[in-house]
Image (cartoon, rainbow, N blue to C red; front, side, top):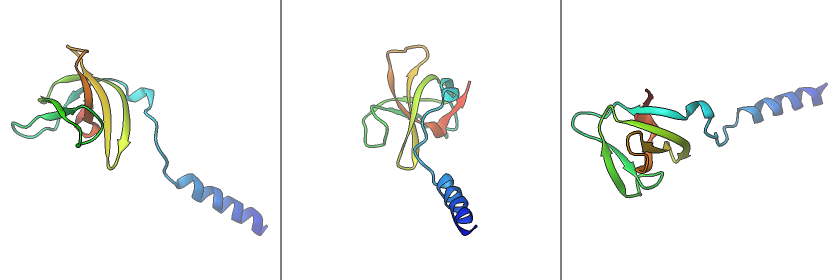
Length: 100
């Protein structure tokens, strides 16, 4: 009886430990930049983090195609391209995207 309870408890604890979350197919598609304040712009970067070079600034309303996302530190970064210029690719923070 005690073994059964301990096993159930252990399985419950293990199930609650967060692990890496893969990008879900439902998150892919077209998204627009939103939530950038004032005259600022969302920075498209060469890699998934603030240590990478800025490729260009994106104002609110810019439509992007999201290919995949990954967690780096406390930020979820998405690999994107411009809808109107698919050759322009980079990474942006997921926090500033919403489905278009």
